[in-house]
Length: 565
Image 1 (cartoon, helix red, strand yellow):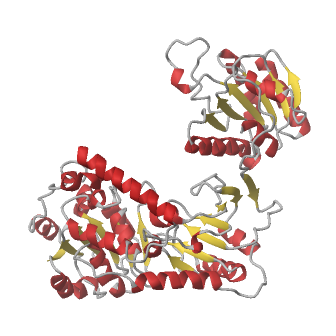
Image 2 (cartoon, helix red, strand yellow; image 1 turned 180 degrees about the horizontal axis):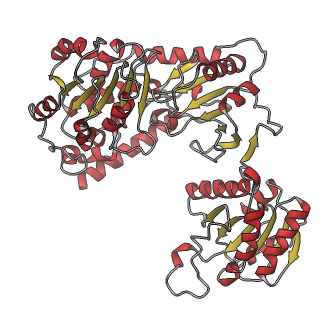
Image 3 (cartoon, rainbow, N blue to C red; image 1 turned 180 degrees about the vertical axis):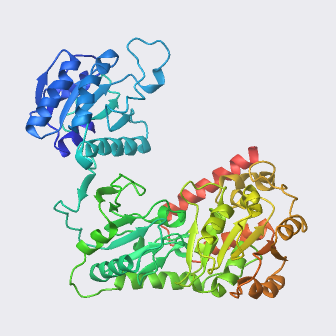
């Protein structure tokens, strides 16, 4: 893989030093006419030779050595390369990180390097699984991109290569190549076929950027896969969680020839797990390799605005792909079952009546996923702490946001474990009156009880430790009421659909109030679990017979394990 990608990225000049842990690499290179080989016994000299060669030729130069102090002797030359931004690639053999610290001969710790010697370090592992092969491919591509990116500089690749294996490979394997482009480069033509855009968490988009995306979609027959954190409210928005939540989904809307990936971390795991594009283009000003879908082929280091404007043509508008997605969503909406009294019911009731131009935040996973099932008004901005994707901080984040715009309403939907985790934030003396909090209190971490979660195999026993049930007053009807009222909140609660209907208008009332509002909804976690499960099975199973058999086999295995646990 390393040799194949060196060729793909145009690295041909090599200065080799003698050693055992690099013999597989050097022995392969010296019998391959592509590589222009040079020899240097002294690694310190080899690194400086590479500096001179890279500066003179304008090409990246690889230096290859074994483990131990041989690799240490590269440091002076790599320091020179660092400050001159010379593309010198140090490839160093290793016995493997697992042997570090056990007094093995020649085994040294290269996990850290002086800050001013390299701009990137990659550790390549022996391939023992598909995931390791994918990881190695990404890391080698990333390292080779860094040689030239943003002025370039020296890069280190630590790699295990068994010197005692036979040299019996006649041809190098075809490997996925990830390339890097800036606005100044000649940009590639998109493939023929369907093109989709996927937006992870994103700051609220400007009207100019949304118009650019809409123009791109119109001229390329494209669609934009979104959730409530995507920040895009344009014409081609397809909020796909309800569709992709279906267990039996088998739809060709999920197999575009090209997927354009923008934004950051997404909490819409239903959609990210279903999309199977042929290739992915990542667009971001940071220029980093982010291979969420394991199909990345090009990284565009530029603004999203520049990218979409470049790839927008004067072609006649075509909305066939988007219309197919709309039909899929309409079919899913028609099949929605009756909801039990849980988080999903709360979201279904409040989504249509939230005030225009308000803001709503969500707790991670269950709350975000639940509200992703429904469409908010396009004027409502929504957000969630999907960056670190932790249970903490949702209330604090809401308060910080609400302080920026006193004349706008800020809502938060959150579960009980996440709420109590951040409980102290409500005592902040800066707490503004434009805050509205919905606490859906089911007495446990319901995420770990969902039927597709590993925790569900323990049944009700999951509540002991996995789902952490029974804490924080165990759904006390007085605890949160007293706490929030003492802190100045206007508090109300609901324990049934009828009670929620009685308080919903009070909660979403856009009239300016002197106090923040708090709505606590008491539900049974079983209603949440059963409603989500029935919703995810509301459409017919469209999978192939082979896929159905695989699922059935997994379910039988789960039953077997559960029985003997």
